[in-house]
Amino acid sequence: MIEHRSVAHVLTSPSGRTLLDFGQNLVGRVRIRVTGEAGHTITLRHAEVLEHGELGTRPLRNAAATDRYTLSGDGEEIWEPKWTFHGFRYVEVDDWPGEFDPDDVTAAVLHTDMARTGDFTTSHPLLQRFHDNVVWGMRGNFLSLPTDCPQRDERLGWTGDIQVFAPTAAFLYDCDAFLSSWLEDVRLEQRAADGVVPMVVPAVIPQVPGLLKPVAAWGDAITVVPSVLWERYADHATLKDCYAAMAAWVEVVRERAGSSLLWEEGLQFGDWLDPDAPPERPGEAKTDAGIVATAYFHRSAHLTAQTAALLGLEGDARRFSELAERIAEAFRGAYVTPHGRMMSDSPTAYALAIVFDLVRDERRQALGDRLRDLVRAAGYRIATGFVGTPIVCEALTATGHAAAASRLLTQTECPSWLYPVTMGATTVWERWDSMLEDGSINPGQMTSFNHYALGGVADWLHRGVAGLAPLEPAYRVIRIAPTLLDDLDDASVWHETPYGRAEAGWRRDGDDVTFHARIPPNTLAVVELPSGARHVVGSGAHTWVEHHSRPTSPRGPLSLGSGLDTVIDDRTAYQAVLDAIRGIDEVRADTFRRTTRWWRGRELREPLDKAPLPVLTAVERALAELPPHDGWCGRP
Image (cartoon, one colour):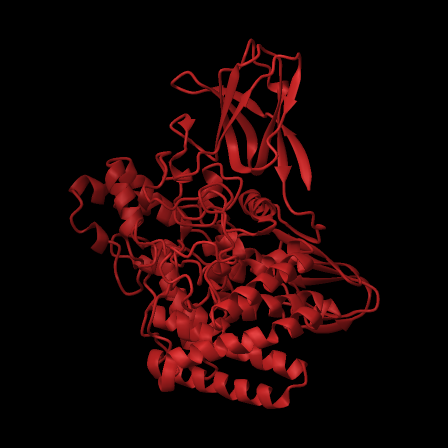
């Protein structure tokens, strides 16, 4: 599908070069209309970002991303390359003949022709922009196959990226045929690799170490993506076509795990791009790779058991179901303490245990409580990578910590989902800090500004926040179960189901919240409201009103002796502390913001123990001047 976009702005770089800004990070190519002498060559260089005013080409690595056109001299010429595409927002134009007119240049935006089937809206402007970025990034990376990024010397079908993003994709666009076609390629590559699902499909880069070795969360695309297509589209044919491949993958992993059923050996990416990993070592995550791998082993065995049951393969269903139970038992025995702590004390480890249903006893709540503590300790900034990011908010809300999920979702400090938005992003970035706060590009050699994986949290916005999900395949029965977030005034979604458009959402009006739903013909909806009220309704429009005040609490006296958890949970107090330090020493304020761990049971004075007296005095004064309040402070 091709759309045309005009130049938004013409810029001049500090070095004097002409730069075209198309206003949006896009995938496509440039069309020019030009008149000039025969033999004159125009050069067009493409990039996604500017770095200090100049075209930021370092993230392209070996990709030239450069078009050159030599004029024939036969009057007005219109030219657009046919056999390539680029990922870009900015184009540098060299050697344009005569006076440049921006109307002579347009961008042809490319993506696979898929029908739009869903959207999310909210009055929170940054969150809305983030969701729009997710949509636009999906469009650019769903071009022929689900690529990881469209701009550098890669543009490959990495299996891990689509595995975490498939639920979001299936809501936003009708991508059933697109992903079914790609899954056929996966099966062919897997067959050639003796049951191993390659990290990249098509498997076109054999020089990559371990390309044909089993890697958790990447190889599991063969079980997860068909299951998503069944859940969202009732695509029985694809599920049936993929069953043998699903079973083969589980058997490959079972052989690697051995009798312990713990997948702890071999190459793993783990929680890839954990924000604490060094720029050049993105796999060095806080979460033990064995926890990630074993959790996914369980998930794939469970999904394969479900598929076998759907296909009437009762023997296989029992075998894989029993295997999944034994993996879960092994997981709990190796990685979960009797008191509900994970051996890797990291948010991703807890989120996996909760969302993948690996712990079902009383320890589940303890896991959720510890996850909340870890999220708070990180200052409500992201502490997860590819694996944990799509599910961390779901794990929090599933264990009663919607307030923490709300703070995490709407955080704007780096790393966070909204930090790139504050930096002008129009698609989701590969790294949380692909662009540093000073406007320079991340020093790592793997830095994309259009990479949808970390946008997988949008599935939770659809299902969990606005509250629209399939209870039976293809939305034959719909679940409406919204979650109120303190930082949002409203949230709504629509989705075009096979039966017609379904809608759900909510809006605050003071302390009253109106919930709405529209159910398409020939379907039912099970509605679960935050009060606990439950309704079963048929087609048509429905509304309910409930009383839900935002949490309120008086602010007691605050000082250097106040608990760190008390300060970080009071956004006004946290900002006052930060501003007080920044007013004296901006570098110290930045260090304090980035390095403080906000643990319960520790006092504010501890991370300030080496601060000079003027800083301590300023902090004490700022806290003392805070007014007492008995209402919700709103967004900071």
